[in-house]
Image (cartoon, rainbow, N blue to C red; front, side):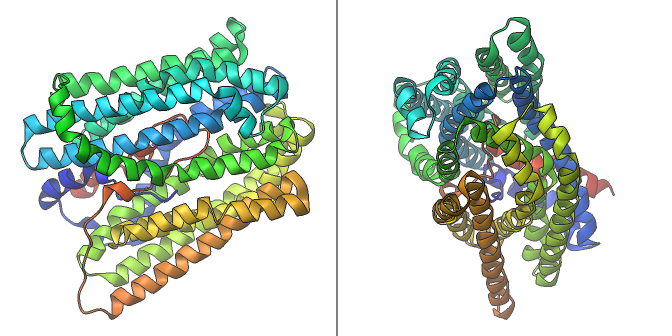
Length: 504
């Protein structure tokens, strides 16, 4: 979904930006785009490769049912972690604001209260999901042995939901304090632990999907420690939990987190629609779709990074009333998106046999991955266009446009196209339908963006609406086990890139 303008650091940035030169209002916009998206993609690649390796290890067991089981389980875990995004957004918005207002004690109390809220909400959600695992799996199309394996995976992983909810909020607290680097390293540390323990538990101990789940739990403990520890020790941003403080701040927390949760569960709902539709045609197709879900963020990491990178460039030029450079930035962003996607699609086409062999895919699983590599991957030109448009709306004073387009794509842009595609072309039609929905909403996003910029050009003055964190849509991906808010942060590379521009 479209990258936000990183609301968790809005107030901190307002304090720092006075001391920074607005370097993006001069020089080549294409250079700025390439430098920022290139640096951001390196961090994203490191995050996403771990998820790809996780699926690779499962596939090496030679049972397509296990890959399908992880695919079904991933769909439900994605829903659970998307709910935790809401509270992490509240942490970033409220704590950064309190820090900016020099209300340190209030920030500490808010931090504790928000993590307590995240823990409580996640406990409720995780408990309900745990109790109804069989029913939830049946609802998205899992059956028989695949459902049994998916249930075993979820029974290990779901109880750690409250842990990762606190970790995500703590990570947002670090970013609110301007410590994005530690927040990133916490997640990278979790990824490293996951990558190391996966083969040990899956192959060494012979635990199969249960081993993958246990490795992920260890990774979540790692992220929890490396997010919370510096928040307490280095930033002193965690007060002792207090029931009275929690009650006093609960309304402000829920005012942001509940709408943010509703906004950000659209993507997992859309993903569940696709998974359910594919499941009707057999577990082999689901296994192939799970592999696709992990290929996408690795192959298109530059596009995800681009969506975050253009935000500061557009924001600075809009603030300087340089709409000509805003247009230039958008045009160059679309050129980069199209060129990069074209290159990746060509590579995917020629290496698809290696991908299929590497993941031990056969039959229908191989067919759906081949269809993605041959035809569907190119639709990411339009996904990238919508990412850029969404970021533009967030920086041009129309964040609600971004949210509406994201919600629309996850519902109206998914259900009818997937339904018709399924009727006409079977399982592959589900994939084709999803791609067509992406094309439609990518074009729609560009049309709306062009109209908005034209209106700005004809206006007498520029006005920015106050950003509302409760309608922030995060650019999350199915089957990604990482903090989605952090993914946006890594893509922006604010600290390192601002320093680089300042010293250049």
